[in-house]
Length: 78
Image: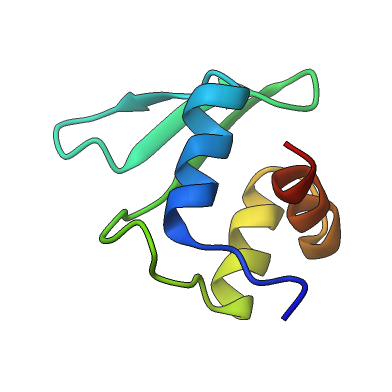
């Protein structure tokens, strides 16, 4: 279970570590810069301890321009 990421870990990775800001009425869209260019990522936060499924994590990594393993490594390193 090395590449298990919870919703809380991912939200903290976006908002606190990389300064993504919520955008929109329901605030499930986050805008920020990670790899030197602007990225928009859609993330529906429900509970802090819910595990993000592998396919969903891969889709979010693709939105950020990373592979799933690169994203997991970035989240776990912080």
